[in-house]
Every structure is written in C-alpha cells, then in structure tokens.
Image 1 (spheres, rainbow, N blue to C red):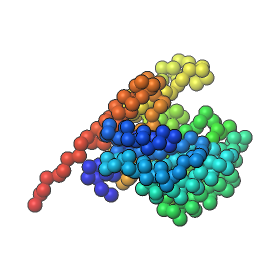
Image 2 (image 1 turned 180 degrees about the vertical axis):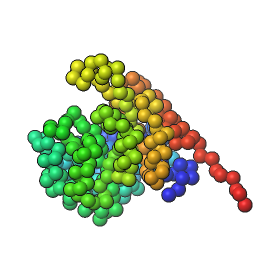
Image 3 (image 1 turned 60 degrees about the horizontal axis):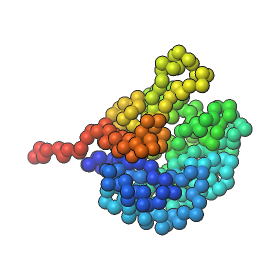
Image 4 (image 1 turned 135 degrees about the vertical axis):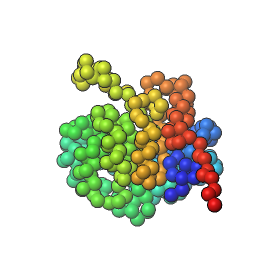
Length: 296
C-alpha cells in the first residue's frame, strides 16, 4: 500500500460507457484521479479491448480506471449475467480488478427466497472472478424495492448482505458502498461502514440529506421525500470520518463520484457540483500530500 500522494485512495467520478473515452478526455483535467466505467442494463456492442485502450489513453498520467460495471438485473436477465462474465474477463485490460453492479432480484419473491437463484447465478460468476483475480462489488441501491418485493437488486440491506455472503463464501464477493443508500434506509452510515469495511471493494461518492423535519411531522407515508440524494459536500455525511475508517482498515481503491442525482447541482450545474465534490473529498482526505521531513 502506497499512501504517498494519496495513492491508496483516489478521488474520481463515473464515466458512462455510452459517452465513450472522449468524455474522460473532457473532464480529466479538472483533477479527477480515477474513473468507474459503467453501463446501464447491458454492455451492448462495445468493443471492450478497443475501449480499454482508448480509456487508458484518455486518462494519461493523471488518472486510472478504478472499476468497470453493468447495472441490470442478472437474476432475471440472462444478457446482464452474460455481460457480468464479459466484464470480469475484460477487467485486467482496463488495468483494474473490480467489477461493479446490482446483485439482481427475482422480483416476485422476497429477498430471503432469492438465495437459491442468487447461488445459481453468482456461484459460477464468483468462481470466474477468483480465477481472473477480480473482485465483485455489489451496489446497494434498493431501486424502489422492499424486502418483500425487491426490484433489480437484493443487495440493499445489511441483513441481505449477511445472507448473500453466507450463501456464497467467496472472497471475490464484496460491496460497492456509499453513505447515501444507508441513509435512504435510515441506517447510520458510519456504524454501518465500521462493521462492513473489510467487505468494501469500491466506494461511490454519493451523499444524502435526511429531511428529519418532514419525517417527524409528516411520517414515511405522506408522499414527500424523506431523503434526498446529494453530491458530496452538500449532504449530511462526515466524509473525513468515512475516509479515516477506510484508511484504518487499509482500504486501497477509489471513491468515484456518482453524479446525476443531486436535486440542485444538476443540468447546467452538474459538473460544477461534481468538481466541488472532487475538491471537497480531496480536502476530507487530508488536503495536498506533504512529505515527512528526514529524521536522519
């Protein structure tokens, strides 16, 4: 582990595959240090070998590819499951060893009844990941689902994580963690991270604001938003504590900002919000690296 110039924890952002490598070229100069390359539902006809070369070239000496991912429902969509396998095999071409996305869900079954299908799909994929030297990081978004009626993703609660990792004990399976998804469930993200940090393989830079006044006066069922997704620097989380917990556990990886969710810093202000988050997270990381003086 090399903490010189903060090489242990890089701060970056998401770069959707549909935007191509040109997107990386346009934003890398803002100071992003890493990129997660992500696809929605399916990878499609992307030439991964060519894309890997172009993306790495676009990063230059300024950034790295932290991870690649596909966000579909592999428990119901065979194409998404096939794309997981495709990305696991391609990860090393991008210079990374983390593949991210949803665990999937059989949507007419409660989460605990999903474990048979989970094992059938993820047993072979976790073995493939082990063979390829790749780690799988499950995103924690509930996608509007519940325990009794999950949507797209069963990996949305600590209880589900326990069941999943008990069902498949592979060291290749872990979490793509962020405080936002904990706060949506009214979970304390700091306590959650302390417990699960050794299973965190990738971090999304997305925060939240809990509207406690609405919750206390109107309740959960009033049709008003209780939690707003926010870009880091505009939400409730203490990112200095988050980074400290990660470093105390010797986490090596990236915090990649997941934009396009903030209700204020969006549209014309999207990149303004993301660059603010980038600089905010760098400050929470300790600011500019300073070499220790020589003592001999």
